[in-house]
Image (cartoon, rainbow, N blue to C red):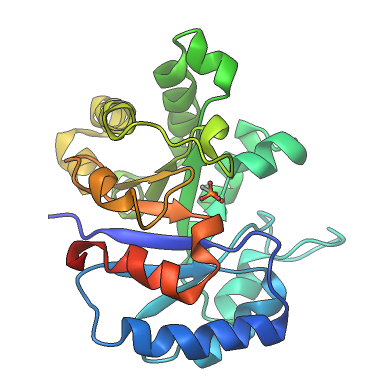
Length: 252
Ligand code: PEP
């Protein structure tokens, strides 16, 4: 059985004081909750606050990006070694905002995924198609291509442990959600692509999330799909009450 995992992606929101306030409020709201894994991926400048304030809560802490080198002349970047040093659990890799705005390609993303494992970080690998690719019927081809490229240098054991987030670009921050059935169909196809390359037993263990305008109102229907194991959530993760409702979707 794959344990569901709901992850907040705060993107470039929240000051340190706001992050601290969020932690104070989320602690009681998620106290005692252990049916679903929960994590918050925050801007790098807030990670130390989350680590300190979420201690012993079971809520994981993640970064939103990293550069695939231990250290070096990479001005402005953060290394996996630095994240490991801080005790960070997860790192989002290949978010569509990184692919589209910062022109990250599959080669760089592959190197980042490999590097995350070298430093004990669990990658949350994002894949997703543009609207025109969906309309041209290329969704599975595009997403499976991004996925298999990123997995190329991994062992089956590493593949099993990773988290994949299927995030159609047209659904991110737009209020347009893929139907639960559409999300399920694509995620099922991605699981099959993993099975074809690494075997069914490995594919059955990989947790694959859906992301794109997930809210407390639609999370239950998405999570009811057999292949959807969680959600990566931007906008609706910024308020403690809303994030707590997402994590506690089974109780609604
Ligand atoms: C995201 O940031 O990965 C995301 C899915 O954003 P939103 O939930 O706001 O669409």
